[in-house]
Image 1 (cartoon, rainbow, N blue to C red):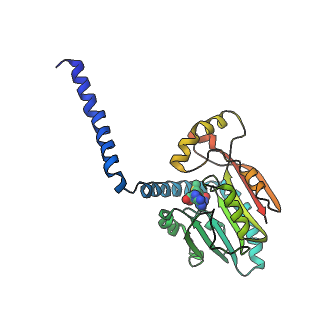
Image 2: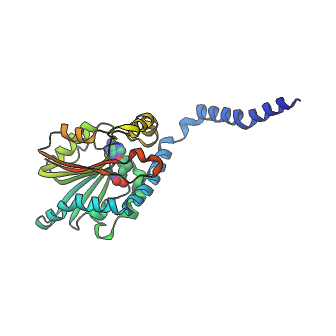
Image 3: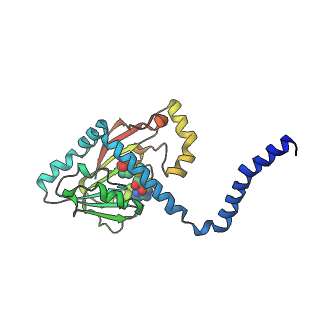
Length: 252
Ligand SMILES: C[S@@+](CC[C@H](N)C(=O)[O-])C[C@H]1O[C@@H](n2cnc3c(N)ncnc32)[C@H](O)[C@@H]1O
């Protein structure tokens, strides 16, 4: 056998054969493997790591303390604060809620449950309910029944942003706030180009829009007033193009 035949044979055994075996297995046994469950587990693990590291950032802590400050004022005049947190993930915002909060977390990915329990502070132990559900359909929550709705880094992930905002507005009591902190589209330049180029992959892997025009979407939901400001999301250097953020409140 010549040297080139040997190289060719080794190439076939190392790369083509395993690929062939994977394709055959996928075709015949793929349906028996719960790929979506596996994906959900990975997403829950990674999101929890990201949430923990974001919460350690002084910038994010201060931003969230300011954002949720009105809840603390409100908690002084109300005996109980009914809060709905959408896409609560592993519970990145629990530490910012007042003691007299009663929280419903609407989250489609049940694999967050163990992290969620781990991050739940003692003072809120009996006051939080984890409900499997989606922002687009919160039919089990009565119209005009909650004091606050919270989304942090969620509106980029929901399938239908307009429907989610309609539901958020529906469940809020009149005069109460929707609180949000989201990553958004880059205004222009190289970051915008990167967001555009990677958008398909980002959605497939992380179920997240690289460029969401959140300000416009909240505007279109027709709240009685909106107060937003641009901010920064402290992301790792290799995804710097995702650092653009928006924080704010919308009042019903
Ligand atoms: C990037 S994580 C943010 C988690 C958490 N809010 C935080 O700040 O760390 C996005 C979250 O949105 C949730 N999500 C995705 N689609 C959703 C939907 N349609 N309704 C509600 N939550 C959704 C995901 O399961 C995930 O928990």
